[in-house]
Structures are given as C-alpha cells and as structure tokens.
Amino acid sequence: MAAKKRSSRISSSSSSSSSHRSEAFKPSSPDSVKSQTNRHRWLITIFFTLFFIISLLIYCQRYYYYYTATTVVVDVEKPYVYQRGLVKVDSTYCEVIDENLNVSENISQRHFGNPVLAYITPWNSKGYDVAKKFSSKITHLSPVWYELKNEGSKLVLHGRHNADRGWISDIRMKGNALILPRVVLEAIPLDLLKKKKLREKAINLIIMECKEMEYDGIVLESWSRWVAYGILHNSDMRNLALQFIKQLGEAMHSVHLERNGKTNLQLVYVIGPPRTDKLQEHDFGPEDLQALYDAVDGFSLMTYDHSSPYNPGPNAPLKWIRSTLHLLVGAGSKSRRLGEKIFVGINFYGNDFVMSGGLGGGPIIAHEYLSLLEQHKPLFQWEGNSAEHFFLYSDNQHVQHAVFYPTLMSLAMRLEEACSWGAGISIWEIGQGLEYFFDIL
Image (cartoon, rainbow, N blue to C red; front, side, top):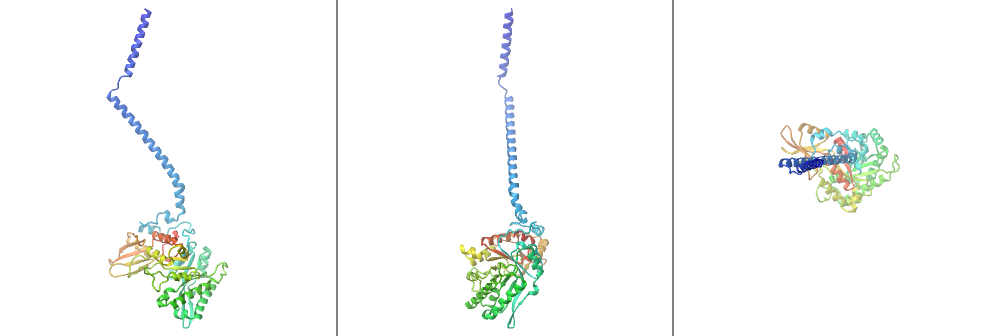
C-alpha cells in the first residue's frame, strides 16, 4: 500500500512537472509577441538616444576646452576692432557710430610692422592730439610747416611760426617717432636749379633749421611744383632736379644729430602716382627712383585723390595702388628692395560727390562723415573692384550724393597690400580719420 502511495505521488509529481513544462513551451499569442517586440524596440531607442546624448556632451566638452584654450587667446591678442568683428565687408552705419571711438586698451602695441609716416596740418589741430595719443604706432611724423620761397633775389624758409616745440617734446617723451616737417619747394626752379649758389643756399637753410629746431630731418615736396612749371620734359632740367635732391640728401646724411649721435638727418621725398597705365614724360618713374635710392631715406607716394568732383568715384582703388607700385618698383628680387623705401599713401579723409543736378562736392573728414551717417542712416555698399565702401543719399534739395570714406576693411586691405611689397604707409592726414583706424596700425 505504501508502494501504491509512493507510486501515486510520483505519478502526481510527474503529471505536475509535465503540466509546467507544457505551459513553459506553450506558444505565445500574437498580441503577446507584438508587445514584446515593441518593448525591445523601445529599449533599443532609449539606448541609442542616451549614446548620442553622451557622445554629444563629450564632443561639446572637448570643443569648449579647445575653443577656450586656443581661439579666445588668439582673439585677445588681436586689436579690439578684430575682436568685435568690425573689419568686414558688410559693415553698417550703426557700427561706425557706436564703435568709432573704441580702441584696444593697449594703444602702444603695433600691429603693422612696417614704417608709418603720418602727416599733420596746422589747420586741423586734432591731428596734434591724435599724434600724441598714438605716437607709439607712428615711426615718422610730418607736420606741414614750411615753404622755401623766393623773395627777390634771395631764398627764404617760411614756417617756423607754425612749429610747436612743446608738442615735439611731448611726442618724444611718449615714443620714438621721428619729427620730419614737410618743406614745400616754392622757389622758381629755373633759378634754383641752374644757379649753384642758390642750390647751396637752399640746402644750408634746410639743414640749419633742422639743427636749430632739433628735427630728425624733413619731408621734401618739389616734384609736383616742377611739373607745374613744365621743366621736367627737358632732360637737362630733369637731371639738374635729380642732382639737387641727391645733393640735399647727401648733405643731410653728413649731419650727425646731437640728440642721438648714432643717426643722421633723414630725407623723405614726396612723389605723385602716374595717372595712366603708361608713364608720361613728367611722371616720377622707376629710373628716377633708382637714381635717388641711395640719397633718399624714403619716398612718400601719394596714392590717393584718384577721383574728383569732375570724375567722381573711389578715393584710391586698390588695383590702381597695386599697378602704381608695379610701375615704380617692378617685379622680381629687386622689387622688394625698392619697395622697402616706399610709403604707400593712404587717405584718412573721404569725398562727398554730387551725382545729379550738376557735378560738385569735395573732401569730408571724420565729424562730417559721422554727421551724414546719423542724419541719413545709409546702407553701406562694397565696391569690389576698388575695395572701398560707399553709400548714397539725397540731400534736402533731393540731389543725389555718393560718399566714399575709408573703413576698417578698406584700410586693412591696403595695409596688407603694402606689406606684400615690403612697404610702409603714409597717412594724409591723421586728424581727418576716425580714432579706431589706429587700432589696426
């Protein structure tokens, strides 16, 4: 009987186990299969979503560390106007109005490594203050002070009344800019160039003034005057003209400065750009540059005033500047050597041209330019061929005007062009520009 009971338990257990196995391997219903599949898809979706988010966070963290470690540091070293993204083609009048007085905290740091010659005019006193503020960015300062004239049979150097010894002292306390006043040669060339005694007198007057006033040299302007007198078409007169400049340069180089015995008086000579693709007889050309190379310390090239009220347009098209340099210094290995003595002219003024109702208009300076921006709120346009900004407006008489005035972008491209030739720049004139122009120098 016991055996029967055990057999019964075994049979019952076997039946129960068999029943559980049959339930375990029982096929799922269609709804159950669908539910499990959806659950698997949901889990997979969550997994890949989390993987994507974590990967993105890691990437962003790496990019943040890279950006803060490199890009920001580089930007801080750039001038303020670059940090603010103001040097661009799509400039706006609002940016100019809001930012034109803002410059880098360190105004003594130079960003343009080549020489900078800055002109200052007595009729625009702002230039004197700007020169003192940004003296460390300028290597040569040329106040427009002197004229050498005929008075009867004598030569007289006019202009000392313009000179400001206090300002010169302030400049020298703030930096190392050389003071080279401009001297315009107004004397009648036929007398001056043909007569040895007059030539020597002119040279002595200039050197004595440099010594007494403790100048570092002069900037001489005479070529344009000689063109006006029509003497440069004559080969003999042209040779006499070149010989006079050589004689002046050699005499100045023989004078050691008492203030700094290591240097001599310097001579920078003003030259005009050719107005056509081919050099005219009266143009200052490459042969003239070669002839004066050793006697002259630099050539102030007036690459501005390309347009006029009678031929309105850009002030100094970049292609014209480039072609002028190519005409003067050529190409190849010698061009760099010659280019290093060129101060490429850059205008800090603009022009407001009348475009309808008759031609007219003329130069404008910083405060006049800002006034136009505030009054007309114009749309800036970029002229690609000249690499200059301009805008249009209608005055109270409904006359259409076109205004060309330097911008940070146009200046930056001209600095780059000058650097490509190894050249410096000459600015006419620093009192006429916006203050943040100096931030890129």
